[in-house]
Image (cartoon, rainbow, N blue to C red; front, side, top):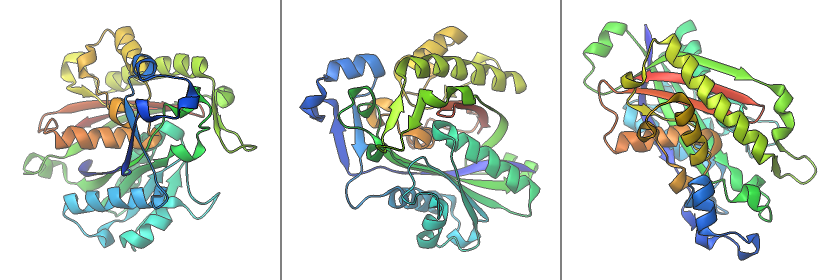
Length: 321
């Protein structure tokens, strides 16, 4: 048996904010943000948009594209760092209600920006171990709600959004005859370093995220490089075997530094942070969705994905379509 990505879904807020439209009191500029991060715009949630409503829209699209019913889903894992409820219930359970996925086991994962890959690996493993066929995995975030909009070192970086995929457990032989493109999930690696607790965290006193930019940058480049190297070694892959590197979309400079350290062609690295900013655990599924919509994911496409996040956490995975 194998676990494949059957479909993708995406949802972003209505309100698009360009760098030039950010509050003037931040004392920054479009040129500075673009040159230091690669970010040109982001989407910010309005009063009628929530982490659940964005997640629900992305999940509904993934279900529709997969050609299944919500009640067919056996498992739903949502990755989020910005739940509406403090503690419980889980965002997955709240989305489940409106989605109609009444037969799904639901829970959330908190691994910050690495969360989507953590959730994907957990879902694939649980499908393999149980008599289940379909899993729904989502990353949904409203980071604008935990940004200090007087702190230009953080608020210019983040955006809101959601992405989702449907996983299906299939027979290995059936993949060869499948008329629709599907992505077989491959090796997964992950790690954590709690010593970096204060590099990026949510302050309980004021409710805003705090970040040591220098520490995060150094960790991110090392983590991204290590994750890509290790997961490619596990799959015996070389650079020429990879069509795209779809990594966490935090900062273009981080991706360029990782590509340089690896000696890889940077043109293979997908950069969608220019449009969306850093959407945490939603960034990888959003990037995969757009790549698929652009017709770049075809049969024979191989993708390596890597992420890093608060915790500190990191992860890497391979998808073969």
